[in-house]
Each structure stands twice: as C-alpha cells, then as structure tokens.
Image (tube, rainbow, N blue to C red; front, side, top):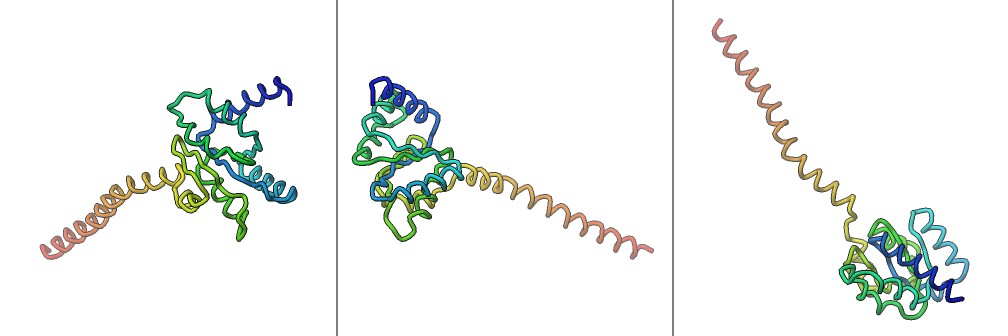
Length: 175
C-alpha cells in the first residue's frame, strides 16, 4: 500500500469515526472466507458497514479527533486482526454478532464504542444486547408521558357517565 493510499484510507476512516457514534471492533480472524462474506451480507442488509482495517491506520484516524470523543480507550482493542462494524444503532451490531456466531465464539467482541462510552471485551456483549436503543428509550418516555393524560381522560369519561346517570335519577325522582 502506497503512502497516498494510506493517507486516503486514513481520511476515509476519520470521516467514518466522525459520523458514526457507534462502532464495534471485532476479531474474526479464524472465520472462513465464506463465513466472512455471509457476515458482510447480513450486516449490509441491516445497514451496518463492515471494514477490515490495519490497526495503525485506524488509530491514526482516531488520534486526529478531539479528546472529548474518548477514542483513546479503544486503542488497546486494535491488536491482531480487526474488523470494525459501523452503525447508527448502538445495539444492532451486538445483535448481529450474537445471532451470527450462534454456538461458536467468532466473531468475538474486542471493544464497542457507544457515544463516547467504551466497553472492552467479549464479556460485554450480553450487556450491550440488554441496552436499550435510542428509539426504544424515546418510545418508553412517550408512553410514560401519555399514561397520566390517558388516566385523566379515562376518569373524566367514566365520571361524566356517573354524573349524567345521577342527574337522570334525580330528575326521575322529582317527577
């Protein structure tokens, strides 16, 4: 790879790291070409981008970002062969990894970067699967906000029937 090609790849990776708040670093070194292609196809169909990168180039791309991004914590994961899964959903790559490997152990999770939070090691995969996505959290908040309003409307509706029934009873007695 020439110096120009490396520079272009670093710039591409800078852009990926800048525009993706979620990425997973995995080890898929022992997978066959057929299985790697199957993983790529699954990821493509679900909107997750797969990149096999040289560790030093990925680290150089992340070093150019401000410290507030907290990329330095991920550097230790870049040892051996590294495959990066870029996503706009923090939970989706974990789901893909878990479903893909089934009873096997590859691809294994080296690290996950979730909006400046870093999770190191394959043992974090179950935690990442339980984590709620942004859309799930928004749905829960909307449900919680709607609940009191629905209770008030329900009470008013049922109370309205009671008051009307009471007035009709009083009217019938007066006659």
